[in-house]
Amino acid sequence: MDFLKDRLDEQIAAGRYRQLHPVAERGGDRLDFSSNDYLALSVHPEVVAAGLEALTRYGAGVGAARLMSGDLQLFHDLEEEVASLKECQAALVFGSGYLANIGIIPALVGRGDTVLTDRLDHASIYDGCRLSGARMLRFRHNDPTHLEEFLSKCQGSGRMLVVVESLYSMDGDIAPLTELVELKERYSCLLMVDEAHATGLYGRRGGGLVQEHGLAERVDVVIGTFGKGLGSYGAYVAGSQILRDYLINRARSFIYSTGLPPAVIGASLAAVRLVQREPELRRRLAENVEYFKECLTGEGMSGSPGPSQIIPIRVGDSERALSLADECRREGLFVTAVRPPTVPEGSARIRLSVTLHHKRTALARAAGQLVSACRKLGIRASF
Image (cartoon, rainbow, N blue to C red):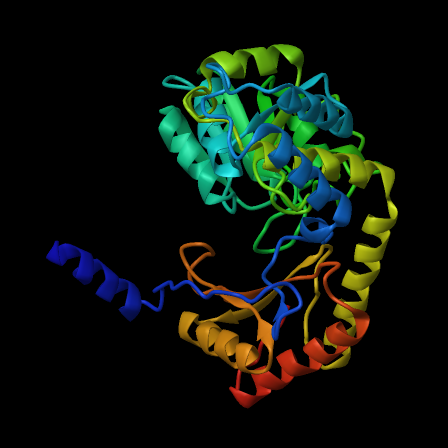
């Protein structure tokens, strides 16, 4: 087992060693800028009460995969609500976003097919592509022209699947969804959009960026999670009824996984209903995001803060990103250094996410503390 130490030593030398950092309860002594609980639904009274009710009624677990005896009506209620939220015929719940991606992609394409991915797609998408056995081509980030070059060369060589995220988790930028839909229709391929960081936050009913762009009927496969804007855990895929039926039969990560705990399903169901009923949540978050960006700019942060609730502060070097994260924690800000291979080489950063857990006064103070920490360390950070 000596190779384990050798590999870890390599991680340390490269500035890529990772450690766990326990955090206090919500409202503890550090302001959390690493959470994806954008709408603060993890502590919303209705969401918590629904989870507790399901726990009391059904117990701590379902005891089996859903195709065995682990299928509760509660799962179907959630799937119907998700389908409504996403303006699709049907939906299917998965154990996590990772399980969804490594189950759905290999179910849709295999040997002799081609899967085309944005270079900045999530690791779970890449793992799903590798598991599929399909030829994988990576196009430049948010570059439809480069994608079209690949599509034009791949015609006639099996099925083609394009996989993108609607909102990228480490850059906070948004995919050109309308152009991607036009390409998938022109070249008769499938389009899969991961809305993990957009669900609940965008769209007239909180359905995400696909909904906001009016593309719900033109995207073949939409996936997302309950563990970010919806404050719970697990994931979903939404699309046609035949897609749902097909994945129940072919997605191995669904077939061979125990169903999610009832408390999680109950909480997720309450959250999905809540975001549709209370657009005020999205409006308040958008105001928080805009205010924080103004504060950072006012403190002297250079560059463009981007279009979303995710704000990357680019540092470049991994060690400097780690030093900045440590300094911020000493100042009372819980931030995380994001380093390669999560982001491209030379683009280490601090990733800030604005949530409804943040008060205006705390956001203003945090902006000053962050810029001060950069100056103290001699770091010329920018958006």
